[in-house]
Amino acid sequence: MRLEDQRESRNVEDRRGGTMRRGNIGIGTLVIALAASYFFGIDPTLILNLESSAGAPAQASRPAPQPSTKEHMASFVSKVLASTETVWHDIFQQAGHRYQEPKLVLFAGATPSACGTGRSAMGPFYCPADHKVYIDLAFYRDLKDRFSAPGEFAQAYVIAHEVGHHVQNLLGISEKVHAAQQGSGRPAAANELSVRLELQADCFAGVWGRRADNMQQILEPGEIEQALTAAAAIGDDRLQRQTQGQVVPESFTHGTSRQRARWFKRGMDSGDVRQCDTFSPESL
Image (cartoon, rainbow, N blue to C red; front, side):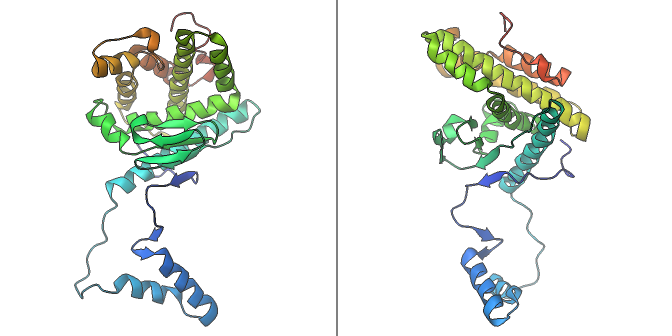
């Protein structure tokens, strides 16, 4: 993906580390440096430079270290999130509404959310109670190795799908679906509504992909196929076959591989949210 010149979102909350640091400078050193500047007029950079060099043996200058893969991925998802902000602001504005941007929480292992404790094993998820998307970046390793769905646009699709749930929340779709699920009285009927909700989020992800590429020319040749592969890789039928050796359609909550790829492609081909009505068709 061509994201080098794209901005990063300001809505990323990084919970992966327990201590705030500035390069190799601890937060305590920053406080001391700022206090020294305020009370004694000392240039804070002097203290910061002393701290960064303290205890280090004299040696020839070395080139600056390259950003770690983890930080590269954090920057990547931040740029993808910023792209979704640009697209959905435009769509909402055209409809006479105001888009409210979600937050993206990066975590490792587990983290609290307004929807309960989020865990890496759950995969990326959106919490409507706090308007936040949660992701452990280790999921991308699983996406590549376990699900055989590598590529940057496949990774971007994951973020765009969760942002699609945020859009559903803003539009009141999620609330109506959850009310209908509670009133259905049948687990199979509730699961079917969940499938329709998830497929619409796939379609919304496709809408973002088309519009983002039209606006920002972010896609390289062949990358659409990456997202289609990712959508198909996490279909209920394929996951059930892998994990339990059999497929139980009544228990589907996200849709089959074919359905997920088809609805993403529909959004990608059209770039039109009106093409994402997954609740009308009898057959998905």
